[in-house]
Image (cartoon, rainbow, N blue to C red):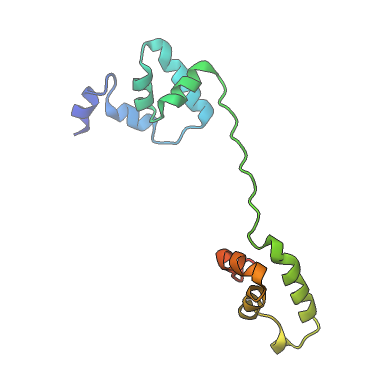
Length: 132
């Protein structure tokens, strides 16, 4: 099955390509492999197919030896951040309260949704025990 497909792949058999790509390559190794293939006369499309990369990656590898560093993801704020001081105050008061009278998640959520400003934001945040 693979032998007939390998003959149409333009070059080596599919088995050779499959063994080359069996392990994931680092981006630096991928860039080096792409740069080795280009002087051999392979087109950008053929290189992209061989290494299962998009042509934009092939073009970037041919223009620069080093890949661009990844952009750091911006940290997301929790939807509960505006309400954390209120929750902390509730829990501080609960430190002196008897165990049965302390706020649980079921008691904290209605207390927060009682305020009109917090109502919409809390519903969107879906208050859970992990967030507190």
